[in-house]
Length: 408
Ligand code: SF4
Image 1 (cartoon, rainbow, N blue to C red):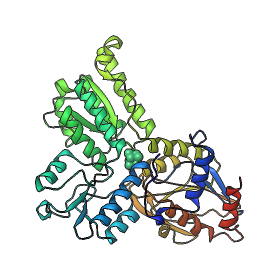
Image 2: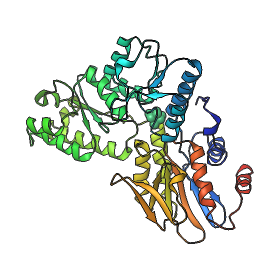
Image 3: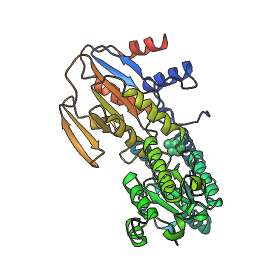
Image 4: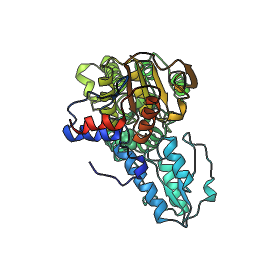
């Protein structure tokens, strides 16, 4: 895979180095078992795959290049480049301005933009409507377009399904930038509707089976279906694509449920005329991160720490998996750790920021699962590890533990 030129302060000499050494001994990622960093009174189980993915490194490289090449111009990002506060803040401190928030709320009106301004398209891609708006202003959209190739792959898949007269069911979060972009692209080729989870899929399938009315559909999926959508003819032949960062098992369950519904309505012999049996459109990083997380669940750890942006979709799914087994702390920076007694963290199921007392178990050795999302710099994971180490008297030095790894 391509090596990107990203600022050195995002490169890590501890967890990133461990990951690098694993890559050297297992380049084809056959082994997803975590690496154990044994400091004596505390052990960290480091996921086999975590941190910056291809699309994020590509976006970071292009964004810093845009700043370097245009010192005298206004440099804008359409919205957060990736869902990581640290990276976005660093770009802002270097002069980048955001045109809108992640949910589409405008910070800078379009009228303020000039043809000579630079606009960076984030890794999630953007909608055809926004692309058109920028072109009308005279801005060269493709110059600093960081849309991830794995997102573009989803757009191509929906275009193909649309050419074959399928309606596109998008499994994704309807207010996430990537899903908004995918919806815009797929709506150009075919009727499209977004489902967030199994409950929404069940509702949609009830419409297909005639158990719910078309009025129910319009009300329930308000803002999530394409213009001119006609449930009486647009739910007869369907295909499923998904946001690249969804939970693999959930997408599979959704596709299977839609397939079973089509089979129940049209019969086995007619199924292929009503359901496109394609693979999910998750990206390699999502798959690898989730596989590595399943391997973390095989450990007998005491707690899990997941580092990443609170609005990061792929990170939230890693949290969801870890919570199946461990008390899990989802933090966006080491500053969330107030001390060995208190920790601030994001309660993902309830979508709120909370503080937990006595979070660090008092036992020896304490075993901690440590991982991060695809938009989190490894240096942040290092800082979390280093901070936790200060709470363990008699812990071995990082240098000696790293030397053990280097000599393996
Ligand atoms: S998570 Fe996947 S789709 Fe998203 S930027 Fe990374 S590689 Fe691309």
